[in-house]
Image 1 (cartoon, protein in one colour):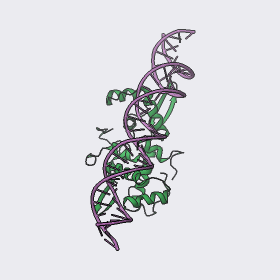
Image 2 (image 1 turned 90 degrees about the vertical axis):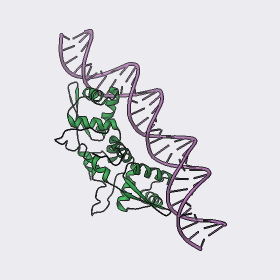
Image 3 (image 1 turned 30 degrees about the vertical axis):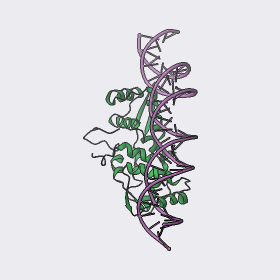
Image 4 (image 1 turned 90 degrees about the horizontal axis):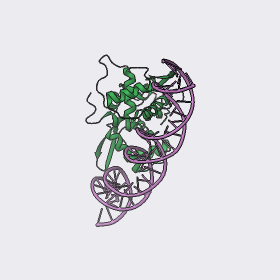
Length: 107
Length: 107
DNA sequence: TTGATAGGCAAGTGAATGCTTGCCTATGCT
DNA sequence: AGCATAGGCAAGCATTCACTTGCCTATCAA
């Protein structure tokens, strides 16, 4: 059940609770490896989200802490990639309780 | 994509964001059709959650608004049942972007 | 009818959260 | 070197949120 390298389910759920963060995930789904500025302009252009660069940066930090986004630095650029792995465990938590019965959870 | 009778994805994600509410879903998974008091005592006994009856009631209201819990009244009792249907749509949002491309979402 | 049980409504409080603004560091171009 | 670009840090503010307390309604049993 190895959450995700120290990332607990709580972080994932909290990260998904915000609509702007979900939109960011949508954008990263559409195009992987975007930089902060690229994400900023897409949120502004495509989604009419008037949010500061700092705001987006904070959202990305939350997503990264939840393991939903991974980053790699190249020079002065920092690219953001989606990681859907943490979503799997949360999706299968309640659907069809398995024969093994309810084991210890992380509330 | 017919969310769930007026329930938007936002309600579902917000509902799942709280650890106590997730524990309630766990309990309803284990035993369906519990009353408010039954849920209260289970949270207290099994999970050491010192929360007032009113607090639990409010959590249940949030879960019901999200479509994750359905209720039926019988006399002075109100039974709570789990409904995992809203979970399906949220689970399949980011995993594997389909060939149809990204369609309109509800952020 | 009286009393106990199951639940609901509403206001108040403290903590968490989303967002902004201002300033600072690092990399790259000319 | 000098300047622009990409990003980070930190304090401040306003709203939301979880939770409590107090009181009220409805159903059932004696």
